[in-house]
Amino acid sequence: MDSSKLNHEGLLALDQPLVKVPLEQLKRAFRSSQKHVEKEMAAVSAQLESALAKAAAKPDEACSAIDATLSRLQGLKRKLAEIKTEEDLYVGRTKLRLEHLAEMTRISSADSEAFTRWSKTRLSRILVDYMLRKGLSTSPAKLAADSHIEVAPAHRLDFVDIELFAQSRRIEDALRRRSCAECLQWCSENKSSLKKMKSTLEFSLRLQEYIELVRARNLPQAISHARKFLTPWSDTHMREIQQAMGMLAFSPKTACGAYKALFDDGRWEMLTEQFRADNYALNSLTLQPLLHMTLQAGLSSLKTRTCYQPPTRNINCPVCDADTFGYLAEKLPCAHHVNSCIVCRITGRIMDADNPPLVLPNGQVYSSWALQDMALRNNGAVTCPATGSTFHVSEARKAFIM
Image 1: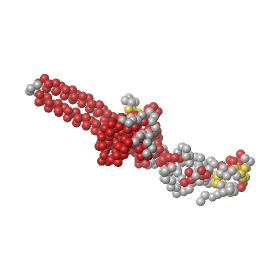
Image 2: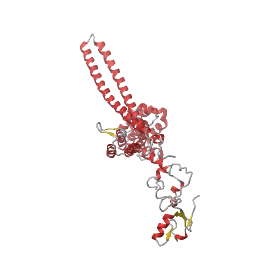
Image 3: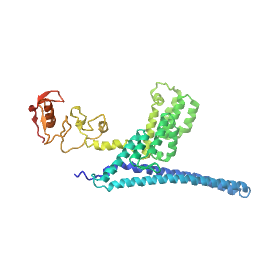
Image 4: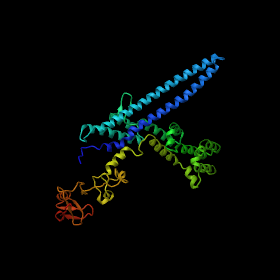
């Protein structure tokens, strides 16, 4: 198979979020403008009807109502202009990202300069995505600017979503500070989409607010909160609501397992993880960083059963190195190799006709280059790394690869 040929579908498979994220943001901005227009037009219609009713009897009040209506329409115009600017940003970003992906389909060889340039841009995007997921802010922005994947004049990012992750980080930090307000506002802004996803995040947040009120022994307010925010979920979460009501009879220091779990501070971290998962799903982002998925695509072609056996690990194999990449490949299937490839455990080099394998008297096999190099440095003596036994190099027998 010609290695210079490109598998475009494989290369672009992991790039779907690149287009989906701005598309979801555009849809959200459109829904926001639509709701705002409907709300304002309903209010304007009511004001005009009131003004017409007063026109004959109270002309001054009618004029004041018309002026208020005009002021409201001017405010609506300004708001729509802001939303239009936001929509133009997402449309432009989507267009640039589609052009970037389309460029890949026009590249036919992996050896071309165009592919090298495109790959560097893609690598920068993946690294920025990884750093943003790890909670960094300054480094990703600097890398984006240095890699020319940023629109400098407007300081807007074309191929990375720093604003999205910045918002996510603010909400996660608020949850770690035990504040549900920011996340509840996010739920309100994305209510329809979360409902389609059948998300239970809002219920979990309201339940946590109730738990904190019970923890503070503010029982009257806890009951009022439950009536207002938990009972609307009774059709789908009756069991959780009933258990929550039982908390009123227990102390935060209770040893009862069911209620001890509800009072556990670890629930805040669970809420953070639930928000992150819903946020990623809402914006069509993968749960795993793209860097991990890209590395796994390559590691799956290298993984063998011997990679996780200490005696047969290869010093040059990334899968064999459990401290760096090995953990990423743990759940991946082993690669299918039609022809076996024997690798020397001393040098990490492939044994073939130019570097044939030699068998020591204890049955261990190493490459001729490794044993000859060891013999030159030790007056013909070679020491087996696996057993520690020492032999003369002349005792090694040549093996033949079938």
